[in-house]
Length: 86
Image (tube, rainbow, N blue to C red):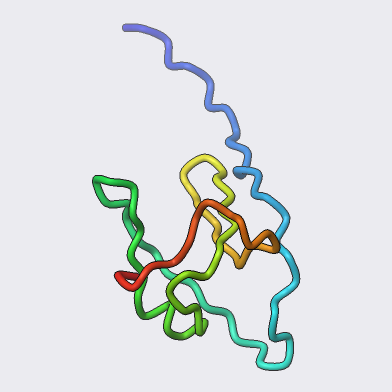
């Protein structure tokens, strides 16, 4: 019988630093879990409506392992944008 490998402690995934929230008065935290579609589109309509993100908003996208974080981009020429499809 083979000897089992020693268990190695797993380290939490490192995440990019989050910018301060745009509205710090509400204290609400909003998040959604969505799957990427076959063409790379991510749909989270209820979350976009709650955030007030309108179609055409430029987005900053950070990817860390299996997580994606999106926030409004400071650069209006950003490649990623919200669409009317969510």
